[in-house]
Image (tube, rainbow, N blue to C red):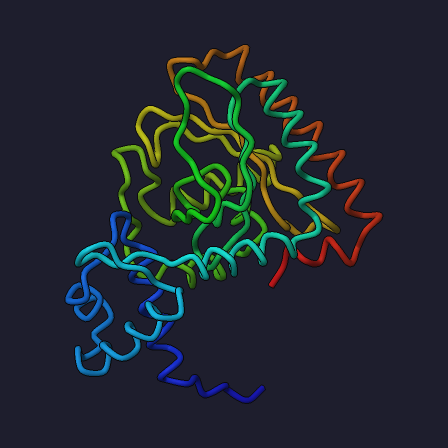
Length: 259
């Protein structure tokens, strides 16, 4: 297969979006230049065009994602027909467990959070669709990675693992042991790997033994009991089985999980 030659001006635009996306409170022009290694003279007309066209917006000196990026993201989510199948199940899981239920797919080495359903709890877990986080540090991500070979996983993480907390999975050796357990038991369970106070259980969604997505329930550790964990796990496994049966009847829609 011939190697595709990437278009450098387009890559610069994507690098700018990536820099802005990864800045929670916005980013200055100088910071964009430093993070992307794009010279200010080259960067200026690109950023001004993106601002003018509504793909970026600025508040004083700080630049954030603009409304037209939101429209593109919404159009992407709207194209995911399988959400019509999963949303009712996620709502039922949320109601049964009285905790937040989330759906994730693999985006390179990260989990991309696609959808969430959250209960009316006094103390809530902060989450948002569109967020990404390293897959090795989340129950959702471990379920997604369980569908890959060890060699494929190692290619996703050429650098050292990010340590979100003292409990974050530290290396490939630990990760591969965890993924072996996921494949054997059919679920992932992590405590405090991205937030020291949060616990999460997840199950993979499969079609023909291929992991397409994962659904999870997260809860504050102080609300966790052995009985509640077993209840959450039973609910997740039940709905994963039901979802898979529905997706088998719609193979073309199921394919929309994959790239």
